[in-house]
Structures are given as C-alpha cells and as structure tokens.
Image 1 (tube, rainbow, N blue to C red):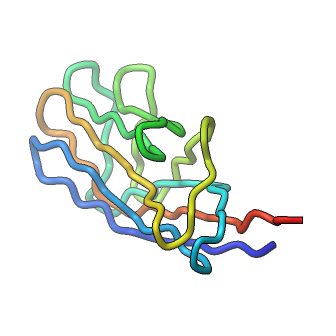
Image 2 (image 1 turned 180 degrees about the horizontal axis):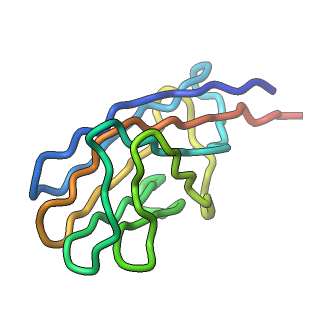
Length: 128
C-alpha cells in the first residue's frame, strides 16, 4: 500500500456558499481510501465561534457525508495556522482519477469566510 496527499486552497467569497472539488490521486481505476482530511486556516482565515454568523464545512463522497465541522456556538473556532481534523465516517472509498472528494462550505449569516488549505491523504486499497 502507498499513500498520496493532495492539498488544495480554499478561498470563499464573503457572503457566498462554496463547493470545492479535488480529483482523487492514484493509478487509473485504483481504489483509494480517504485516510485523513484536515483544514488549516491561513493568516486571515481565523473565524471565531458565533451563533449567528458561522460556516458549516462538510466533506462528501458523492452525496455521502464523510464528516464536518462548524464555527457555530459549541463548534470549532478557526485559528490561523492551527489544523482542524475531520472525524471521518461513512463511505471513504474512491476511484483514482475519476473520483472526486467534495467539500461544501455553507455560510449562515454574514462575515465568516473560509480561507486556508485542505490536505487530504489517500491510501491505495490492497486487492489481495
């Protein structure tokens, strides 16, 4: 088995929802497991907890949710340079090159903006 990591930049416009897509790395048609996904806010990507103006971020494989976090009261504050790891669950197998990891960022209220980098690590499924 081998692991591959993919990084992608997230830059969400103020007061707009955003969907990010990343192609799954690996050899053609290989089955890949998503092993980890983290978000690291950049220097102007800090977001405080707020019950009115917040972001909900959800990772998906197709329509299947794999994990999420939010900056609502009781959620996760985003601190510049501090990684937020997704607790992954659900269907985590992807097909290399044709599969896509989707990350939705949905805003409630105004002011909160998702800015930083995502790092996704995939591992090839061993086929016996």
